[in-house]
Image 1: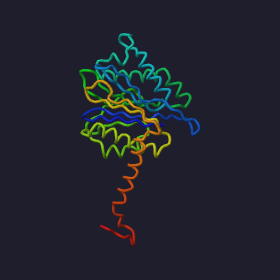
Image 2: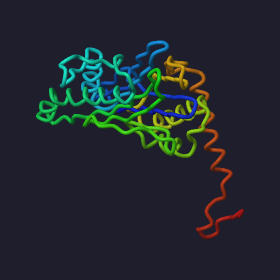
Image 3: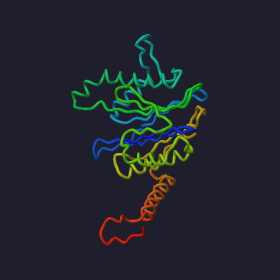
Image 4: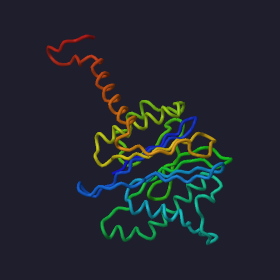
Amino acid sequence: MTYCVGILVRDGLVMIADTRTNAGIDNIATFRKLKIVSEKGRRTLAIATSGNLSVSQSVLSLLSEGVENPETGELETLDQQPTMFKAAQLVGRAVREVWRVDGASLEQMTARFDVQMLFAGQVAGGRLRLFMIYAAGNFIEVTPDTPYFQIGEHKYGKPILDRAVTYDTDLYDALKIGLISMDSTMRSNLGVGPPIDVLVLRKDALEPELDFRIEPNDQYFLDLRERWSQALRDAHMQIPRPPYGANVPGDI
């Protein structure tokens, strides 16, 4: 299982990904799921992956080596793409190529071709963008109305993002809220776990402002976890009890 979130606010981009993969309770491993490609002053691109690890790694390897252009026969890589839209199209083509090679074999072994990706970043001369790419290679783009995407085990962290994140949220508040959503997911699903990889990319900076790994004993994250838990306990105690039962003392 996986949890990755991308948040695009007015001032920049936050991407957060856990690193836990497992094929059973006794086979747990750590793999980096957030890949960053950066050329200072030219571009910074980031891909977060979920789903079948072999599929996502094949897609990333193909993007590094080059995807064949069906019209010219030339190999194209992410660092050659002139816009984020063209780069997202290339990622989609890489997904479809892996499906062409491995899809039938996976189905014969009753394994799903399961992959989703968050692809984000900025190319010089263009705007900062965030896409979600599906297993068919098609994609959608985030909008200011709902300025975030999630992949993987998203249901536990979504209510927090829905209530707290807007397009005008401060960049590092967006990071904080994203980490709270990650903690809530980890609390409810043991298939999601640390270390946690974090990227902060400020608009038009064209290089990461923060590329950081949060280890299991990170003091800030432990403090955030405890403060959030206490805040929830305090909040529910301040809400009046429902008046629906018999003999319930009311304070309404």
